Image 1: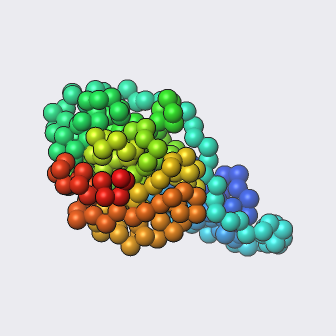
Image 2 (image 1 turned 90 degrees about the vertical axis):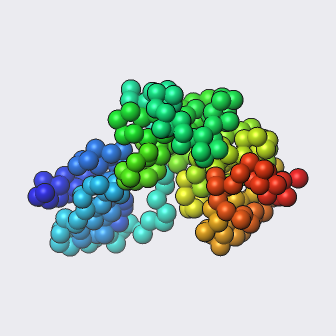
Length: 266
């Protein structure tokens, strides 16, 4: 595709020198996937959606005017995450039972018990063919996370702009995990599953974790070193330990999952 119109679009955005923006992509229309950064003499942009090719730079040259502007603005620190916007559930979200394949995926990943007991809201996206987990802030739905039932990329897709973790349960002991299935798989253990949807720890995650009496980090087996690193950060705010797993939580049978986790929460 020609990038002339996209460059013009990026150049017209209101953005301070050395500043950055995160907004909806003008090409693929995905929410909050389009990043723009001003270097002082050009603007670099990129869409993080896997199937979108919106990427480039405007090629603006450094002028006396914007050079003076750059010198007057200190280099920014970490970008502040925008506040959660109200999330409207798309009309393509239907009850989970509309797709047997979706039900089977939830059941095979040990999340069905939490679903049947109304501990979580799990739906099916008929347009994207995804199992969808609704993310709540207390009683309000602030986002949704979808897991593809096919080879569609990305495998996990966040529909809104919230960075709030997905939570399953109401215990004061939290089990920090990577994905929604793992968070739901510990429902019967009377702990709260907290999925940060990856291994990167955000300030918004810490704000949630501080509310718990104890946090046990149980990332997937291949992320054990990352779990140890996270424990150093989280332990500054709350009692924290690392669970060393024989396999990913969602791959363990109920008995083995309970036996493994009980060692860290009892």
